[in-house]
Amino acid sequence: MAPKPDSHTLAASSSDPSSTSSMDPLLLFLNFLPYSVLRPPRLRLKLPTFTLPSPMTVFSLVLLTYFMVVSGIVYDVIVEPPGIGSAQDPYTGSVKPLVFMPGRVNGQYIIEGLSSGFMFVVGGVGIILMDLALDKNRAKSVKVSYATAGISSVVIAYVMSMLFVRIKIPAYLH
Image (tube, rainbow, N blue to C red):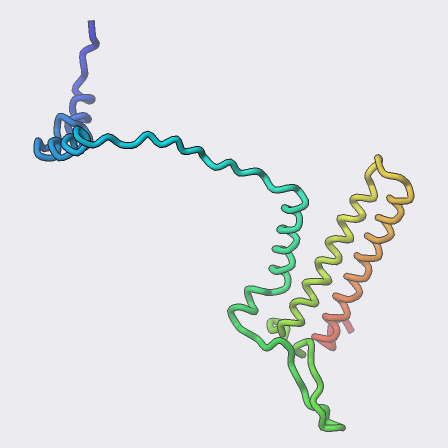
């Protein structure tokens, strides 16, 4: 014996517009007529298979994205600063190129952002090399090479970044 429908299911099915019992007869006829004459084709479509990218590809994309973010690409696109600045030498009167926008902490030339971003990436790669130097399965000479390259990269990146800050803000930390 079939179960008796309760009042909630009857109310829900009568208010459902996709239900065939509540459809207009003309609409039912228009839905039925084309499919009684025409037959939809049987397509044998295969879903495309996507392979995961290699870890080195993902690392390269993340490193490139990091470089673009810390270089200030968004600022460069919105503000459209010049690539490099210029200033007139007071003694000779010749025009000198300026890489760093002096005195403005919240402004930069394009080359300034790219050089600072490159130094941040060099420091990040140095930290990665120091991490690779801790691998127990590597030869000792390789571990020493990784550690030396990593420490020197971090030191160079720090010293250059502090030099950039001192060029940009001459009275910083004095």
